[in-house]
Amino acid sequence: MPIRQRWHDLWASEVGGWIIDKGLRIVLLLIGAVLASRFITWAARRVTRRLELGFAASDALVRSEASKHRQAVASVISWVSVVLLCVVVAVQITGILDVPIGSLVGPAAVLGGALGFGAQKVVQDLLSGFFIITEKQYGFGDLVQLSMSGALTEALGTVEEVTLRVTKLRTANGEVFTVPNGNIVRSLNLSKDWARAVVDIPVPTTADLNRVNEVLHQVCERAMETDTPLRDLLLDEPSIMGVESLEVGVVNLRMVARTLPGKQFEVGRRLRIQVVRALASAGVVTAGEMKSVETP
Image (cartoon, rainbow, N blue to C red; front, side, top):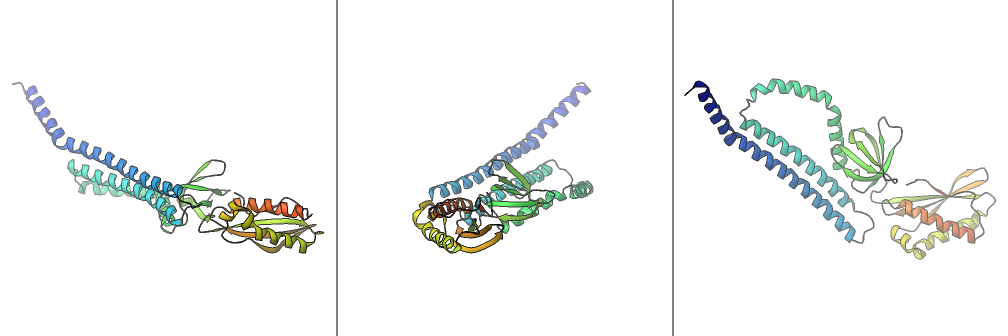
């Protein structure tokens, strides 16, 4: 038999043995990893969907803090599980290929140092996301305002997703902000536990303030009686704080009301409608457009 034929047969037998022994095991590991990652993603989505259905089926107008936190935790657990799965599969494949770990120590140290300098921002994002979730600063469905380093404006919107690396907010205009957690220097949660609607009412200095206060107190007393949707959003009866500020020809009175979390803007709009009607019926004309301290 020619030497070339012998080498060909030997090479074919070795390659075939490698494919049957090691190659098949690697392929099975990769297929198993893909199936496992899809199962983890499916399970996380199922948990999230079940929480959504539970909220939709309940009579609650807002999500509970526990529900918000569970959805954030489910997202993080699925992400971490997929990463760990990839690491385990990579280690298994290294063992199948008989790659000497000792020979990789030097290159791994150099690569780790380079990645350490280059991935500082990623590590910062992951640590910030970890503390955001464990400290329950905000969760899925919360209305938050985020101040970011290097940004001139703040991001205000509803939290649609919280992971260890980023937070996604949807604004009132439908736009989506993707904010790296490491960039967040201050988070203002507008929908945690309860909120407060603050309405400033400008009246002319010539108006009878005693009469105006009497009308506003009547509005506060009737707010939970005449307006059923407003009663469902209020936690207690609105109150008048008195004169908030003085301007040229204008006195600003302030009305406040404790509301369900995230419902302060709707309550503020409904209260302004009732105040305008009551003052108009009493013959009192407001000095200007009533405004809320916060805007949605």
